[in-house]
Length: 281
Image (cartoon, rainbow, N blue to C red; front, top):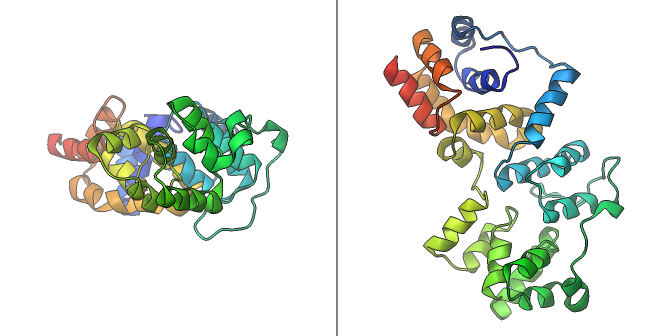
């Protein structure tokens, strides 16, 4: 392995979950240098370039937006997985963090002029009218992109309680990662519905992402950047994996060597990778 490769960052994320002395010995065994306290600007640019061009579940982008940091929002803006709803919220300064109400400054060079086009049926009917008029997925998605912040979601919840919204509108709203769980539950539950939500990349939290998503290398690469991009939430992933890593890898240098060999091509989840490496060793 070599320092600052995506695979080395993936392994480094797991190594940080064990005792420091054990991690140092394992790093030497697999040829992974101790990470610098601060990465160079050039390295940061390369990492963010990789991240913005790598598709991720939509909830991962929401965790970044929850930091309500203008510079992080600008990175989300450039991400390949970012949709119109997120870009609209970014240029309008909509806060996403729990309990946050103050508008978020828009980082240069982004401006309100770069907001995605406002749908014609929204201009004609308003938010709830546009959602009710949506008879196919395209109009429903464009109408759903106009729901902004807690007031917008509250208006949708109230309208649906008054008279259920059409199926396409419910679907388009539910697959937004910032749709309140209570509203998603209000829309009802069905196996196909839950499958669509998962396909859209909606995840309960970083712990579920760390333990149930795959392939492991990609998940760990994203989580390794989480300490910079979504530091408020990344601890949930660390806590979900810590005991597993210590039980199956711990201070066993041979197990870490096996993990280093597997990590680049392993297609299963992170727990499956950790357990497999430990079992082979």
